[in-house]
Image (cartoon, rainbow, N blue to C red; front, side, top):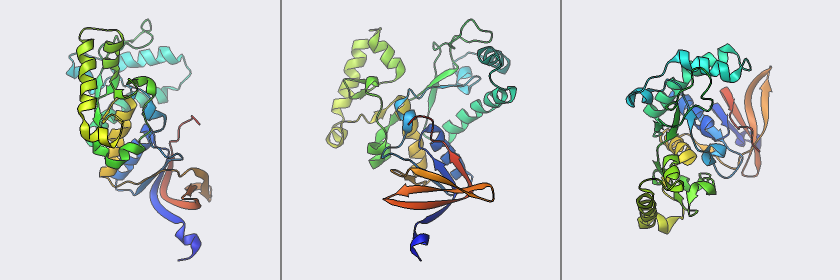
Length: 277
């Protein structure tokens, strides 16, 4: 094997980026029997998804009925039509309404990620037709970071502003109770701090909270799903250029371990690197 061949890798799918969209796409491709690699330019995976709230907006999601409420595709379409005011095509709106609920079902059925609908998280523009007072917005449930093993330390940390005392992770609902000093806030605060400090095994290993919330819960669950599928995630591997053959993208060139490597993509390249940085 010559030096050029030694720096060439072949996969069915190459995913560029390691945020929620990238990791979910990698999971889906792997479940279709394709060989997949994820490349991330930094030394941490998760991107802006990891430091976000991790919330999603999904009309007609299956959790709405579980909470005894109702939604309709027609109402959601009226709301989106009013919000976008012609700035988006009908095809795109229909695709979102058709596939977002399916995506959520697949996500929860095939990965450790779990979501909860928020009954009091209203659609932002309440005066527009089709708006709902809650339920369409969902937050990720906490995820046990210990399930990631050594990969926990490679997960991009949450925004410091979302941690109590710079250490303790809370959900958005818990944060609201704490900051508004709602009923039971003191019990909640003491319980979460106690849980954190009594987790002796993790405290010896890291200051990070094993209870991942918000965007960290979403990305952590997806990373666990990739570990279960043996999908590699290459860190410190920035993409340098796309490779085109006869007008078709057939791979990427990336930096890895100080060398320029070629990643041949037999089926396709998914660009999911986001728009920040």
